[in-house]
Length: 361
Image (cartoon, rainbow, N blue to C red; front, side):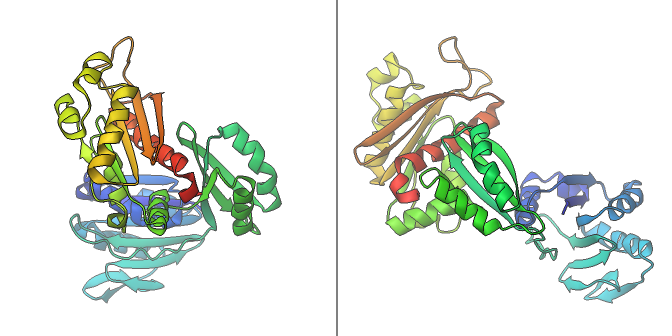
């Protein structure tokens, strides 16, 4: 079933952190087919709502305080309904469910959830329920075509649609969606049995990493240069991160790489900060300082400037160390500065899963 999100109010959709918060809260619905943004005074609202309500699927409308009542009135008019007062808010009388600042109404083949939200405040409850059986499968060290060939027979047997994307080289994220009579659990179990040391079944890989490290009573740390703390920030978004993460070091300058992590001056002068040798010493330094079981390190050129013929923009060295084992890889990512940083972050976690395979698979 299609899921569409309509945001009404400039103060909502111009606020990037708040928009990300809204989308996170809607993750349980799966993929959003469409995100539409309208100012509260838009003349297109009536036409847009008529078009959307004529289609099958879920419609989530998030409005600001000023737009909530006009939108409620529009919907009420379209379905030949009247407004009633509920806790100082006017909502359609045919609303099936109402919670504080949120109501759900069904019309033809659409479920419509209207929510009043304000930046800086906790979102009201979204009342539309997950309508599809959906799961996420992560596969490592395999290309998209090989994964498709391997999983196609399984997906046909259990009536599952699969959608594959590459998050970073060597890391596939696969959305598995059950058809009408599909058997999602059996499909995911079968995929894991086919690839016991390459597949992880989880909707949230970072929560999964925390869970596995917690069970193993192990910790992780990071030494970051070009990602500027992004790797650490990603982990600390999840509850329970403090069980496995005591802290990390962002060493953007060569002076701090040397002073904090103990990277040798000769290494920086001869090989440069963006090198295997530098990342190796960053790993050793981070592990010694924090006493973590696992350490990850990243140094690279995110751009748009700073590249050379030998080390163009997108050149990134990423490494991991655990016990006596060390992995360091040289990558070349394409894209703008932020996309290069994000690909680097995902690749660092891929190496963590690789070097700690006994804990994670």
